[in-house]
Amino acid sequence: MAGMLHIRRLSQYLLTPIVIIIILAMVIGLFFIGVPGLQGRSASNQYLYKGTAASVNGEKIKAGDFNKYYLQLLQTYGSYFPEDQIKDSALKTAIDEKLITQAIKERKIKISRSELETAMKELKKAYPTEEQMESLFAQVGVANMKGLEKVMEKQLQWKILYAQLAEEDKIEVTEEEIREKYEQIDAAHIMIATNEQLVENPPSDSEALKEAQLVYEKLQNGADFAELAKEYSDDRSNKDNGGQIGLNLVANYRRGLGESFTDAALELKVGEVSNPVKTSAGYHIIKVLDKKMATGEEWEKQKPALRKEILAEKFVASDQINTWLQKQADEAEVVILDPALRAFRLRTENKFTEAAQAYEKALADKRYKNNLDIYIATAQTYKEAEKYDEALEVLTRIPEKVTDELSVLFAKAQIYQSKGDEETTKQTLSTLVERCGENVNNLKQVLYLMNQFEYKEEAEALEAKIKQIEAERAEEQKAFQELLRQEQERIKAENESTEAQ
Image 1 (spheres, one colour):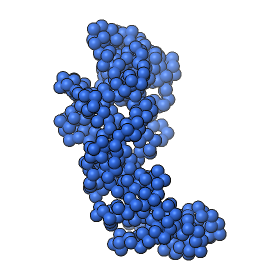
Image 2: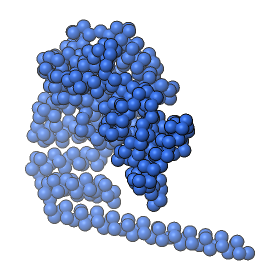
Image 3: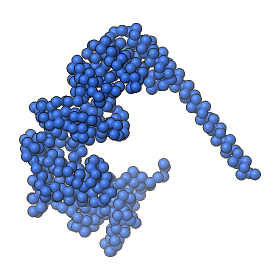
Image 4: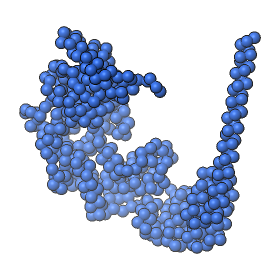
């Protein structure tokens, strides 16, 4: 809206907090890079997986271990990927976690109580309020602090493993990288904005500088910094909090607020205030509340731990983690025990005959005997194996209480077309069109098949039908809107007549 005030929260410029819980990125996000993250199907109990999914070197992946990944993936990606693909991704992650856990055990990586307490202390600094901690519990998937401790212990073990693997892969860490991981600053500022993205009708550069100098003079004469921030600062995110930006890494200050701001802040002693400093946002008067620089005994003491942390981060960020995991999987004895999961994996490997056999075992399993998706997948797998009669026969076995006519007809059309039976394929598509009625979404799926099968004449006829239905609905909507408008006008006229009386 024109004239609205637009101020970007400067605190959002600081890209990463000092302490980050990365266990979810390591355990889940790492293995699903590139998948669109939108909320999808609800992960309710009806989707809970039951049974033993697989074993890794003789250790079973139980339902609980599988479900913690499956439900998160189902909730996030359920609207965009088939359930069997989501289950396969969850299985891959569960196997990878088991491989990592076994490597940690083999290398005898343990976390002392003092190390865990130190990590938890730093974590509490980053999430100081009860609300922030509750939010963290939800993000990590724990109920209380005890659960969070277990997650943190696992994270620390994984960090050590990744650091070891990074060293074995000759990954290097520079002194400057360690310095950037250590140095911190806590600053406050009073900003006179000149950027039109931050404030409506910003002053000219000279006017902003003049106002900033006025504020600086007031500070020199003993005025309170926090009070002046409330009165003058254009940074709404922190002006009522004394202009405090917060404790963060110097490197993040540089990325978020720029070189000139950060350099000016570093030149100040704790408690000192700067002259007006120019950035792309405007003019800032900076006060340093605290800072920690890479000098002294504490710096030297923390360097080894920081180096390991950077090594771990580099290993995770690189493709070496996936290479290592694949090597572990190749060398391990991985057995997929669930027949439906095994069938899907075989199918993705184009082992269609073996996949069909595994699906048949799944259909004999009480967990899947009433699962329409498994029947359809079995038929499609037989089709891919060019066993068309078997594919069609599977569809006749679908229990009546779970069958879906459209799904079966879609599957049949694809089987007949692959079989080369053009006449029956077209008959099936014609039946599909009839059964779809005026459901445009379903008709478009039939149209997709017709185009895929290169049935040009049938596709053109169906496309014309779809356009006609859409045009009729548009006219109906237009007529409805007109009726609605007329009714609103009638009510308005009645009201005006009543008021006049």
